[in-house]
Image (tube, rainbow, N blue to C red; front, top):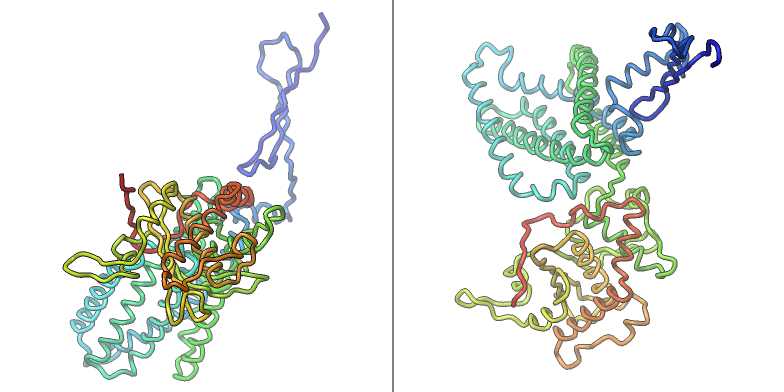
Length: 489
């Protein structure tokens, strides 16, 4: 046996982001000794001095940013939070100006003002706002998550208009008119709460990468708190010095303009990976424009650059060389009655329709949806004046991948009907010379479906999208009531 030998155990400690923070070395002078280790050496991976700013920055990061930042969040988290914090600062100051105007409007400083009147006005505002909240949530509830970027910006538009109405209230004659202005402001502020809160929850779910949604929201609240405090401190100085009519309005409008500009920049910085209607148009028209061997897959950052914040819901647009052209409209997940109303008339609770439902059932027997196209406008269906509307019925249990296929099918079919999609498989399209327009449309629908199924083309698209970072298993196409049908036996 050898004499005394040193036994060392080395442990390396890492943080949430798997970065080494320290190394611990346990030493024992004799392997046969039962005594505890005589020494523990600690080696810090990031040695600091008294003048170093590392401890301060690390502490601030732990307080205001999610644990494991930046690995624990998506890449667009920081740009969004920077602009979101700046817009919140502007909003805090503008809010103080509008609050002062409201207090003036209800009679603060006026000996003739009645506290009861102010209380009743508050009750009326609160009541109208609560009712508006219920109705708004019912009307757009299903669209808040798919179109979260749109409603995040719309929320601040509602809020800014409410601030302007608050500042106008002292200039409006007391009575019904002033009550109407303040109630409208209360309604808009309530809409802001619904749209802003719901869309922000969707954005937070997008940012969270480690299942840390709750912590991310908590840290976001901390950021909002400190920004609001700073805004209140600066705003208290502003409202005490800015009292003139012109200067107040000039400052208010400047703050609101900066508020909206920063909000727009923040929302534009977000690179969503779910596929809603607008993103589906950009992605699949780009892929269909490219050859199958050299299929171009737009990245989330590229699509975020191209998409509009305020986009017409249900528009079918074709993207070619970064240029977008509207070619029709579409709705997905519709009820059968809505589907039939596109080309039917009702008599005594029944429909008389020219839609070839038996043919459509045969065409889509092995699919999870049924699609048909209806002409809008003047001229025959081959006319350039004709606008197309695609209506999509989803079958019970239709997965998200089939919904994406249905939307892509509608986009391709409308593009083919306009005669502008150049592909050898669509050179001999059926015509409506014999007055059988709907039969001709059925032929185009069938041809385009065969094209998408050939070589399992659509499945290949979805696999490539998933490999490029797109989430093809998140439902984001339906923005209205969701209906499903069961296939006939």
